[in-house]
Length: 295
Ligand SMILES: [Zn+2]
Image (tube, rainbow, N blue to C red; front, side, top):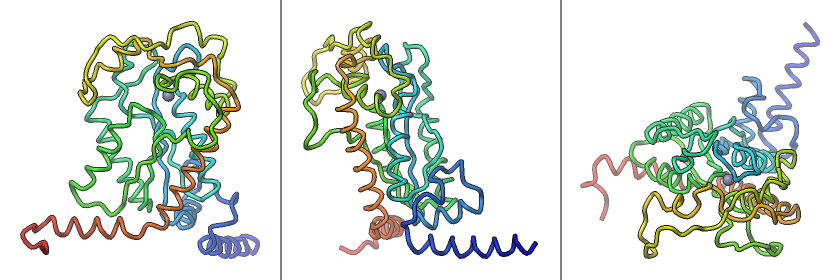
């Protein structure tokens, strides 16, 4: 009894110390699912309400990478970044846009309406639990239109939290020279395979990377700026774009480091952002009576 009440006093002191100094990493897990309910409260305080939602997918990744490649990579990056700059990381999430791979085995493609509803209810639930600054870390190119649309449509109705979207950020200054054409290195190619060689080397079957072609078949010719949904299948029907076989750990290390740094910078920027929520609230208020908005 005595020991346990001393212990709870110690825990109390420790948790208020964490709340004041965001340093002292390692004591609280960054993983939502690993925290106890009481630790979760401390974690949200320490994170200043900042949470990451790493967003992956289940889809074919050429002949040589696992179906959950994007999920595995984006979680590798997000968990490392959150350990450097504390944030709470939401569990595995892969309910994104992937209709273009429905013809390949292992693809999980939820309907359009469910993708948006699932994401809205997820961020609503995160916010209800104190995540007032939510960074969706996108690991899947097929979400590149979905996520800005989702963030933009947060203006539809009032929310007491802000959604930010952090995209893929694998390249930057000082990048090792690529061995394949970067213009068509888009899916399970040199770049992505290199990254997987760092995040989950045990799952990369580099010897199989040439079993299929990742070449651009260019079967539909349209002017720039004219979009159609079948564009991807028209170019890359094997759901493979690039040359995974020329991947290297050297490039992968650079990419992982670059992306982690980008996420760390985003977490810091989001913690410092006092304006977005204030302006959202002002906007929601004014949008109730637009004729009263000052000229
Ligand atoms: Zn991918």
